[in-house]
Image 1: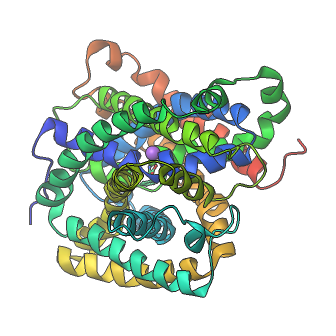
Image 2 (image 1 turned 180 degrees about the vertical axis):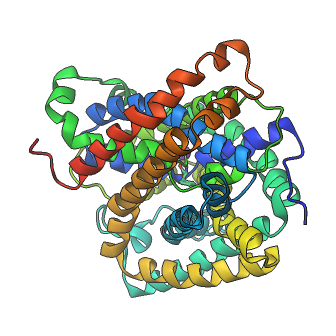
Length: 445
Ligand code: PHE
Ligand code: NA
């Protein structure tokens, strides 16, 4: 059976940007930033996106395009041994852990979109998230959360079952421009809110002293968030690049994707932070928790005549962003099952979803566990995963990697191939290992 490829040049970029842009930019970013001291965190985070994110994307792209395989098949074929295939299996584990909590949050957002649109939720977020910090009202909302979680998974599955071209590519080609247009509109609207200025000030307040004092404490979470936002370390980018033809410049694509993801992140910040401040919610106050965004935003929307409409649009945009990411997570186990186990795509999708319904429901009903999985556990898995991919590129692929890097690249980009291999083989793995140690509590050094 021949493997699918992307239909158009833009198709791959939009799918990869769709994977990158997601809850990481809109929901996770504000609370992780808040929990780690605001501006000091931001500076480190942006640094990691640039210095680790772009070369890291390139590492995953090289593995994917060179092999034309899912993460398991890619490491096995390129590494030349079955054991490398087993190493690649960590991608499936990471993807399932990620999607377990991601689809629960996707469910929350879907619920906001649906119930706000139906006029059921008029600014009373309390039953959904209770107080900021305590983001579940009780068992009842827990069960609702499970129902919407399953619905969100069903939407994700409905796209992935259509395949690479007719499912993922078609969906993201529509979704991404829509997200961009709506976010610009929302940012313009947010700028008219009283208190918006404080929100901008929060985003721009880079303070060197705070940064110096907190550098090692924020390094781990900042690196984790940078990898999360760029969908790195799980094998999504390996998988998506495996559907690429030879005519692409990988360095160009990686840069484009990182720039667009950051732009959407900034745009989302220009929506979220002004609104939070307009509601008197200080994101740098301790422990606003994963629910704060929704409490603050729902209240902000409720103060307006057209609030219901704007709220519905906002939560629909976030739902689309979440879906374009969740499909990229689901595609990992699906591609492994289809390529390696030879099952049909619908069976692979169905089997993965059954597992996710169970694992996600456990998280939906266990908020403390949810918090640990959505934060430190995911940071750890992505950081460890990217370290393995980069060491593989630098030491196992070696010259093959630089050849693949140059393939389709212009002269300028091609001249960066050797420094890049040194970076992914040595400097970045050292950096990532260091951040792993600091986040495991070795901050004393
Ligand atoms: N980048 C996505 C986001 O920001 C999350 C994601 C992580 C997607 C890892 C795929 C793989 O929401
Ligand atoms: Na992102």
